[in-house]
Structures are given as C-alpha cells and as structure tokens.
Image 1 (spheres, rainbow, N blue to C red):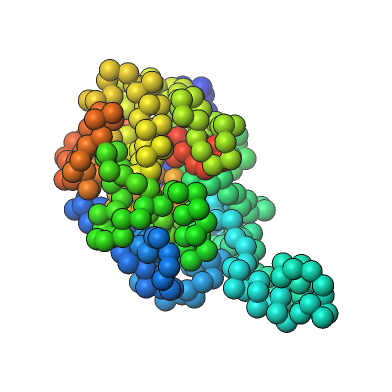
Image 2 (cartoon, rainbow, N blue to C red; image 1 turned 60 degrees about the vertical axis):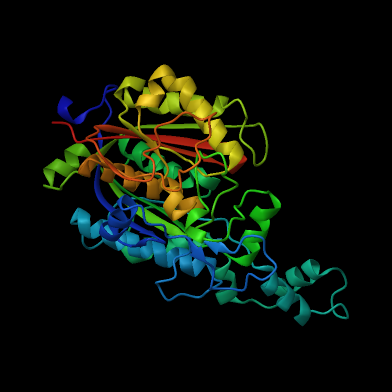
Length: 427
C-alpha cells in the first residue's frame, strides 16, 4: 500500500464514500442541509399519540413517512433502510454490499399497553402473580412471531443485512447517545485491521413514544418548554432546561481510501480518528469534572495524529440539559484551553432535537457537510447566553468558513463517550 493511503501509524486511511440522513427536518442530505443551515427547527407538537397529562408534549419525530405509530422496530428499520439507500446511491454501489454491517439501534422492549393486553389474556385465575408475570407466561405459552420481531431490536440489522447483501454476522449495538459514533468506530476498526475494504455503518432511532417521554421525564432530562416547540432546545444558554427527544437515522459508507480510489469513487471526507472512554460515575449522569469526556476527545485527536490546533470546528453534543452542556464545556476547555473561544462550536440538536441512538452518525454526516460546503450550521435559540459557558456557538445564523478538520462529540447516558475526528480528503 502506498504511503499516500496510510495514516500516521501506517494504517489504511478511511474514506467516506456515501452518506444518507433522515431527521425531523426532512429526508435526504439536500433537504436536511438546506433546513439546518437556514436555522429551521424540526421540533413540533406531538400528534402521533396522546400527550395529555405529560409534562413534555413536543418532539422531533419523523412524521412524513407513513409508519406504525408505536412500533419502534418497524420505524427504526424504515429510517435505516431509507438512509442506506441514499448512501449506497451516493457511493455508486449496487447489488450486494459485500462488507460488514454495524448498526446502532435503540434498546427495544414491549410498550406497557402491549404487556397489559397480553397479561389480561392470561388472567390471575390461570396464572397467579402480577401483570408482568402473566405477560411472560402468555409469551411462553403462545408463540407470536410478529409481536416478537416487533420488540426484538436485533431483527433490524438482520433485515438490513438481507436487504443490502452485507457479509458476516451483522453487529447491533446500543451504547446510548454515543451509539452512532460507536458504530462508525467499529467500521473504521474493521477496515484498519484488514478484515474488509468497506463497511456499512448505520444508526437509527424511531423509539419516541409516550413511555419514552415518561421515562426521560422521570430523569428530569426533557425540556418542558412546550410553547412554542421550536424554541425549546437552546444549548449553552442560561435558560436551557433539558433536551428534546427526536427520531432520525444516518448511514455512512466507509472504505479504505486505496479501495475507494481504485474504483473511482468520490471521497466526501476522511475518518481520521476515533476516541471512546467509559465513565463509571453514575448510571445516567456524566462525571461533573468531565474527566472521561476529556480523555475521549484527547484519544480521538491522538488516534487522528493531530493536536488541538488542527481542529477548525466542533460539532458539540450540546443537548441543552443544564448539567451536560456545562460538563461538555468544561471538557472542551480542558483540551483546547485559551484557544477554545476562537473555535466555532455549534449544536445541531437546537434544530433537530436529540436523536438518541442515531445522534452520533447524524452529526457525523453534518460535520462532513460542513467540511464539504464551508458552511457552519448555527446554534439557534441562543438569545440568553450562559455567562459561565464562553463559546462561539455560531449564534442563530449560519457562517461561511472553510475548515479542514472537525471534532464531533457524543457523550451518552451510562457513561458512554465517543468522539470522531473528520477531515477533508488529502490533497
């Protein structure tokens, strides 16, 4: 292999040759990028299911594709299928993909309404115990393949593998908000290790439901600023009060740069570095001192063979929760020091909400678009800056600026932290 196709450690350079995305802003890169760079919000009042009595009644749901309202597996699969079709078309790949699949998918389980319905069929006269015991008994006694697939998140990757002809056992992972970035990292590592010349990395989340709203509300994680919906997500501001849950998906086709050039593929960017560190502080909260996040960013930069001076823009995790935004600012400050105020840092979540499992991949696509177009998306709703967080957040209006390398952060519940460094194609 020519040195032109190797990184600083002699590993294959990883090219992105195809991308696809769906968010509440629309389907496809073109529609999403136009809306995102125009400061348009996709967050809206929830109409798909009843929200009476809930503190949060807004979301970034994907409602322009006709799908079952409460089937998270079917919704997640459909989003993943559509973004993969777009990515493969952009990559110029038809027929079987002939490479492994790494999928980030939401943790799926039956909605409580479905559990109680089944429990009622197996009443206490037949099965003693509470409703959950009766639900399990009913599932054991009467096989229901359709219901089983609807609550088995591993079925998403199996269907994608069959649809697109991937090779080997499809890998499904779920590492909270870092999942999308982690799926990309697995694809990068597979190519670096010489196990394949290409990898399909997909992240999807169609799990917004009344139950998910209730669960996150119990953690005090969601914004309750319902009116107007598009103003609710306000990362890094003084009056931020929580994230806005959302749906979406993204697919990236990864190839060794050498293989991509050999087949004449267009290269949209290079995946230069990946960092991932665990945080043992708490089951849901990140360590307030930002130690694991700091280590994650530094690991990504080291993996890319860069120091902090090489980063021209940061796509922040930027959830709009009081604690997470403060922690991320502290982590970035520790790494970039006095230079941080001069680095543009924006949060896509101000417009699309938090797509959870899909977020890391969705934001990787937008980061690559920033490199390709020289346009920095804004952080909207930035009207009341937090004096304790001094950042150039590209406030409210996009900015034209050519950048050659972007850091994208994903810091998730349960201490899952991942950062990616993306760069322009080598000259």
